[in-house]
Image 1: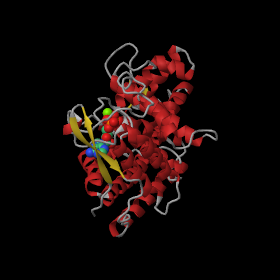
Image 2: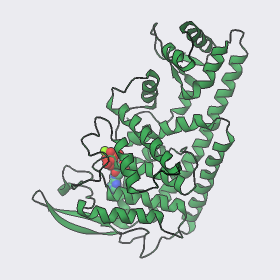
Image 3: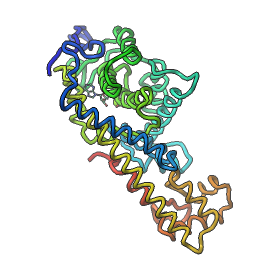
Image 4: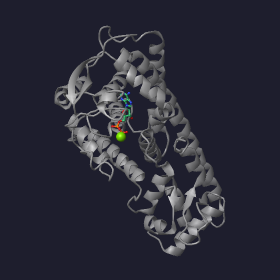
Length: 388
Ligand SMILES: Nc1ncnc2c1ncn2[C@@H]1O[C@H](COP(=O)(O)OP(=O)(O)O)[C@@H](O)[C@H]1O
Ligand SMILES: [Mg+2]
């Protein structure tokens, strides 16, 4: 399918002629989206898998665990897509230490978790901001709050020309709209979210992500914020009542195709090709998230049985066990804080869980050792290791 999706505007920049791309407003027209055959099937499957994921959230007894874990998984994966060097283990270790991150990558991931929680909660708050550029800019401010983002105008729509790929606009893969056009283009983007439409919401989510990336409204963080926008839109349109879909797993695994599909919307007007890719991703990840939640649950159940069968199980060891899914990495110091208990009681609880094969030492340090809920973490971190 070929169609024209925008115009080029010639500008001179640093003595060079630059062709910036100005996308037409959504939805695609001339011709309108062709939601037939394969695409209809992909859409139905993605909707169904997403519904099952949402339902799984209602059925599992401790959905907060999965929200906690999956939000972090998404944060790490989304940051990794653009090369952030931090893993899920790095993030959880920093959180367990209770100290501020010293590594820029982990700091970025922490900022992502904060940005997601903030914006997700805004949508749920009666007097919170609706999905809008105001909300996105406030979210962006949090997202780029770390050392690396500081110089990239956190919270502000850019006032200068940017580009993607290449060393300067003149040899870039793609030059987004010049700053003087952004005001009007971003109002159109807001309108596309809030206007009446006959298109299925999940399709609109896919279109809006691309449009956001094409506008590239900020100096940095557009990829992460655009993926966060997907999560927010799923909530906005009632497709997901908790942030459980870590779509970035699919986008990271298929990164080259992800970028290529974004480009072909612009160059060939191939919205349908992008949507097929996007809907496939939603279905695959929703399915895998349901399975992961189930398997994590059975790891917890089976571990609990093992603990309760032991003669040396103490009250504190049982209480410690119950908080493990949200604190899968622990030290004695941390347990003292979490359970408000004495050091000997904390050390004993830890020893019991270690003897039961539930906690495993992360290193062979003797003092203030770090222990992890190994089976749980091994499963959770699938796909979150760094790209080779
Ligand atoms: N060819 C392309 N066309 C449009 N968008 C693209 C293209 N290639 C990459 N992108 C988007 O740009 C993002 C990178 O932009 P950037 O502002 O650096 O975001 P971040 O700092 O969050 O990684 C990618 O994650 C992707 O979403
Ligand atoms: Mg970047």
